[in-house]
Image (cartoon, one colour):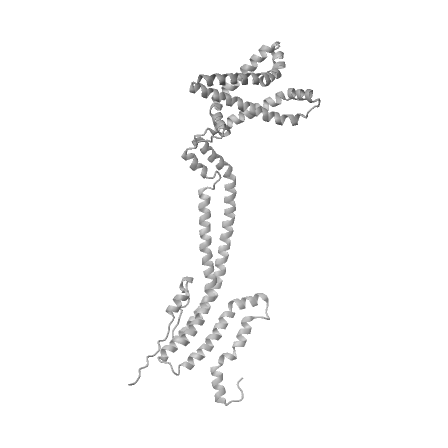
Length: 405
């Protein structure tokens, strides 16, 4: 390799530049370009970085040996040099073991993440399964604890819809014949029932509104207002009995005649219709309409519903909410994933940093005669911040020179 010089010079150069005899072969072996992909990848992962640091350590060792000519405390420096090579060996072994440890930790973490994912899907399925019951429970609690008679309001509206449905079905033939006689055309029954149902629904709601106003006038003992409301209620009674309940009784007339051999006349029909109106209004009024109708009228009139503080605070809480166990499980899994992610990241970056720190120790040994890092690292927390490294970096103080007087 060294030609053209004296044997002694060639021998000295071969000793000083001894890494040149093997570094190319080491690099080609660690690179593994001509081998299978699996072997090539394994060599580049496990051998390339240690080989580079070993070659670098050899060259820095040569530079350190040259500096022995003018260094103080040569024995201590040589001991530090041997310790540096010992730290490099430990770092390489820690590098290989850290890779295996990282792979093991990663596999375990992936299995745990898969378990968390499956359990999360199961918990979500349970929450979706129990959500309707939880919603019903929350709504039931609010309805029971509220000062607004929601049950009475719902029953009042439901009963008005039932009455409107029955009367629209009963009075449809009469209305159809009436419109056919007026227009001369036979109207479709389904096109007629929808507007008829809406009209009758307003009529029934208005009937309860008049009855509610009558009760309020009677409580206030205002004679003039009470007389006017009684007149309006009588008109409502006559209209509903003549056009709604009479048709309902007429539909039952064949059955009554078949069972009793008695044909209903005008007076008996109107009397039965009137008693039916009075019975239905009385039962529905005392059961739920007396409480539901004022709330409906307050909404229609724009007065609004007066809520208690408990109702206002309950209205801010969404009716659909996840259970506390589910939220605790989500928080615990999130915290575990965050903690495990930092641990996996540390296990990933720590092995190569072991070898790089050993290489830096060679440089600091050459410059200042001491090490910067204490190897091997046990955790990421032992890798100091850059500002801390600058403060703790060993610097050889310059010698003070004194002038001779």
